[in-house]
Image 1 (tube, rainbow, N blue to C red):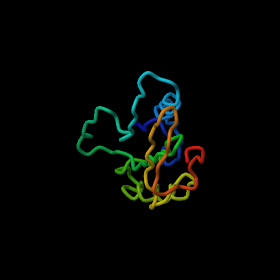
Image 2: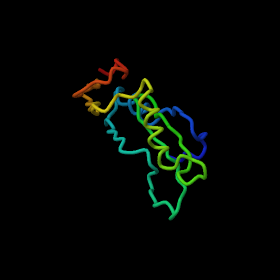
Image 3: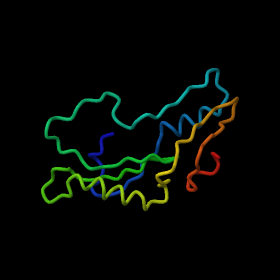
Image 4: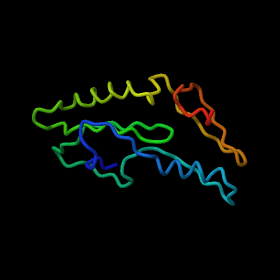
Length: 132
């Protein structure tokens, strides 16, 4: 995901349109039920950054409905926090209501017929209760 259009040193929310579309479609009567996986939000065709790239110390956090983008600044910026920007963004993320904590485990969603069943080991209290 290209973050260059996001203001640096700020927090943003970006809808998970791929997930939301799949979730709405899978509950409909379809001749073939599509599967879904969300392995990463990196670009589908990955290429190594050039040597000495000034990438941003940014964090992307997935919630049920959107991504939280903690946009940092270039780690090589003069007078910037450098790699410490990751730590600062991580600390800010833990203060957000969407943060589920270190003990949160991913939920498995299983479609049976036209219903979606959620199985989970632990629950984040801030997740959308309609999926429990």
